[in-house]
Amino acid sequence: MTTEVLAQAGGETTNFLLPNFTIVVEIVIFLLVLFFFYRFVVPPLTTAMRERDEMVRKQVEERDKAVRTLHEAEERYSTSLAEARAEATTIRDEARADAQKIRDGMRAETDREVARLREQGEAELAAQRAETARSLRTEIGGLSTGLASRVLGRPIDDGRHRATVDSFLAELEQGQAKDAEGVR
Amino acid sequence: MNVEVLAAEGEIKPGEHWTGSLFGLTVNLDTIVGTLIAAIIVCGAGYYMARRATKGRPSGLQIAFEALTGWVQGQIRDGMGLRAPRGVVGLCVTLFAFILICNWLAALPSEHWIPPPTSDVNLVYPMALLVIIWVNVAGIRAKGAGNYFGHFTKPYAFLAPIEFITQYFSRPLSLALRLFGNIFAGGIMVAVIGLMPAYVLWAPEAAWKLFDMFIGAIQALIFTLLTLIYFTEAVGSEADEHAH
Image 1 (tube, helix red, strand yellow):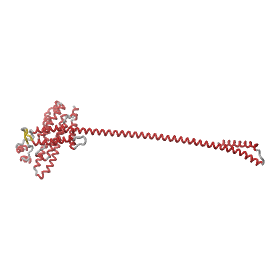
Image 2: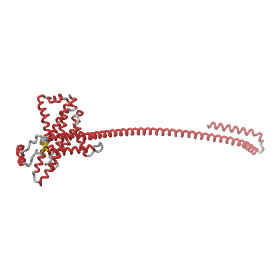
Image 3: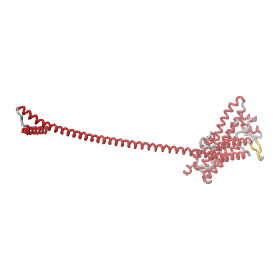
Image 4: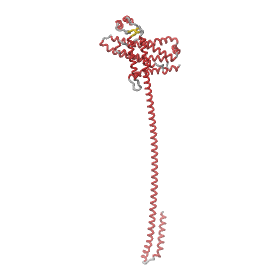
């Protein structure tokens, strides 16, 4: 109904659903646009997109590689740390053992020195005692003779009674030595 | 009813064009000028973008073109995979960008002199025809003529005529007239709104132009998407090939 009225009103109006020669011009223009796009627009665009995809892929790969390298470095670091710790422990143990050895050696040395000094002292003491005993013996002989002559009220021949005194002293010493052995 | 009366008065003349003569034949000069303007805008923007296309930091225009190309490539990959015929990406990108700019010419205030070229069947018929021919050529090249036409008789041979009519008449006609009808109706709406008094005209006019831009984008998308679907159907997906 509408179309009829329009047709009547417009007079020369043609059916707008039917194409005219414009269609040829239009298809030429569209094909030119299509050609232009194929030639100048789409290739650079798709190239840029492909290159960007490639770039992104490469960056992802590089990132993965960096992460792997980091992990390796961390592993190396922890391994080295463990090795260093083990080495430090070994060194400490060795040092401790050395110190112990040195301490033992010094203690043995000191003990030996002490023993030597003690032996020396004892030897000196023994020598001094022997010396003292000898001098005492000499004096005791004279003193006992003098004492005896004073008790008797007459002089005693020192040469004759000397042997008696000496044998007495010798017996005394012998008895003392036996007592000492008995005590021991 | 109102429209009929107005039309009868001759104030709204849908489908009337500013005509000229070329080789003695009538041509719609407004459609040709509109198409040329759209072509110049699309090619200019495309060329400007392509010259500065970079893999680094893309411009806004490049992002828009990349989004379109990426969407088309995704559709092709999902539907056809490696069987995709050469050049479909370029065809679909061109179709979308060109139709979009043609439709958006309706948003300019110059719509009365230079209507959007897609509101003339002279542009939409050849585009639909080109798509259907290309789809058939791609289908025959992918499957072989016997296989491709033999597919019409499956699963029931008696439905082959219907399939034939669908393929070669309904589809191109609906593809073309859907786009044409939507944009043409937009022009009529503007003419109707133009009959309102000037002091209220601006509000519905602005609202309609915005909505018309949305319709223009949707129609460009539908035309491109249907083109891709027809290609997918004709070429067959990789899954179909493995199934046979």
